[in-house]
Length: 449
Image 1 (cartoon, one colour):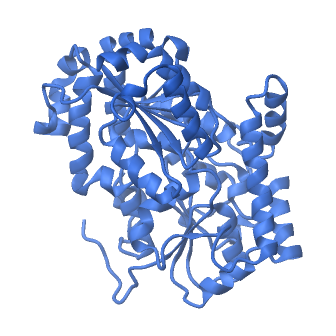
Image 2 (cartoon, rainbow, N blue to C red):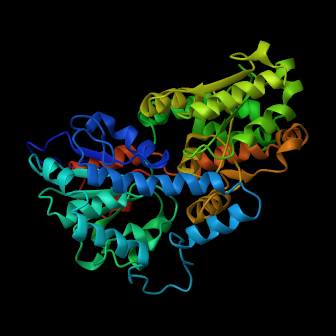
């Protein structure tokens, strides 16, 4: 289908995110090629007023503290449960009008009125009114509230979203939404967002893992399937279908040991789970059957914890061989290194965060316990499309993982994620920002899914 292009349209946009966990910055990273002056971090840009900085620091600090505090027996769960109610996603059925603002949303707008929170950032960006795309709802609200003269786009970063993602008056809002899946499209409508302000794009995945015409993801998946299905239980049953989608890229012989990547969340939670996995798989790591990547992210404490556990389990000789610890102080360098590791990853084990969308890369996801309402919905979505499987007792992974491999379940999950999850989010978002699509057609029929 031909793409309609508008002459002299800029090929740059303001890409705005927040440093709050990994999800919002991970979603922004694939858009770095179109980012004017690089990706802007709304809570930590050069020249940010102290009063704005203080508001951001307080909100981020509360989230990270409660996420870490959750592991405290009994009390941690109770405190987190109370906190999570303020950002909970309501039941979808029965379908009803959910446009009434919640308490959290009202507090955000009160800060705009009382403290002019975010006005400095929007004033700076308004000097050059490029399309503004943000991966956090608050910065989209700021742009609209302070009269940003350009177009405003907001990227939803979970498989379902709370009412807080939508402004006080959604029916008259200028904000356009990029929905990562169909449920978010329908949810935004229930919140009162007009249909013409919602674009079904998919989550923005790293282009270095997708490739032009899916060349990279198909190649990686073709190599991955044989590791996930060593007895070819799944492959033999569906070889015709696999050949149709992957062609010659479906290989017959493994080229590496089974590789598992365990990733902690942005707040550094669940690091103990990584140690438990390593302990259970110790013999297989030593024998060379398995490579384990422990992703510490940007957390120095988690990085040291993983290395201490390697030493304690007497696996020091296998560090950077059978066991790898990924750490980088720079978040965007970390994302790039993580994306590179994913190309040789057979199984991704993580809590169901924004990484749930990475099942589209043909990587089966073993889900750790969700933290927060949005992750419960992410886990449900993964199970629904067949791209993820809930973890069994991690201390016995050395036993149940073998059973899963023999059954072909993980190979099936890899293929289901590839087939069912959207893969062209980054491409679709760029097309819409620069008006390179036919507005006379429904978005679902124009954009690649």
